[in-house]
Length: 321
Ligand SMILES: [Zn+2]
Ligand SMILES: [Zn+2]
Image (cartoon, rainbow, N blue to C red; front, side, top):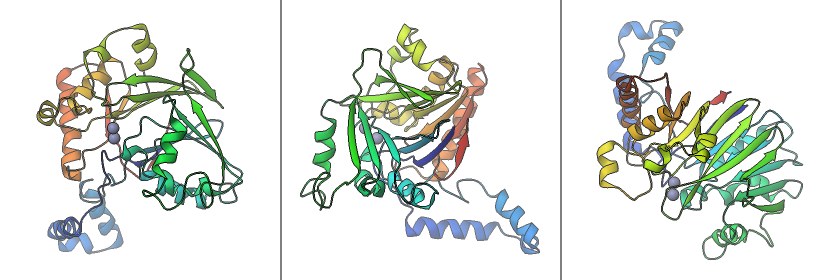
């Protein structure tokens, strides 16, 4: 299985500003010594010694995660602005540029940061493709159409100039709360967020990935109920809302997001192997986001429980499970 983050920011796209770019260049220049530029090798060594927050960025796009499962299906969690980047990448991939593909898009909920990339998903305009949308909201089709209606967007979703692909809308309301998609089994679980939000569990080839964005964890999520045990136990990868510091989470109770330390507690509680801090706060710099990861590591060591890998979800890298 291949997992790729195309958008990891919460709430609103967060491009780097000109001043931030200038400050980064200045900070790098200050670190250079003459020996760092003696040869191509020393230059490389110098660049690789720079902190991640300086020589890179988590990215500014909102939620969009691609999973290519063992049977080669393209599963997409949320259609934030990162979906546009995925769409551009798909154009370059063999087999996708000509059309004739199926794309599976699962929505956690319909706040703008999870939906705003959809009108820019070029593959949905190709009549040779098939796009299947999934949600537990019975008004799925109406909600997607409304977002692309006048005056919000120049062409309607369905109609002249709109999506030409074969569209399907799947309501996730089966009593078993699971479905089969190629080699994967996908199930879902409601989480605490204003207006509600849905977390997804994708199981494939003996591996478990959980996508739980926009989640304000509460005591109930730690209880060993049959449903919680089935859904959360022993995930190989947990992509989890970790938007706030502890202080900010206390100020923003009821806003629907979690503090990173609570997400660490949650991952430890359920024996997760790898925690991906996700839905980064738009007002936080890269430096602050990486400092949260460092604090999360310290906290995890202090809690002294099972080994847990803690990573910052960032745009641009493939992860294989
Ligand atoms: Zn969100
Ligand atoms: Zn939300």
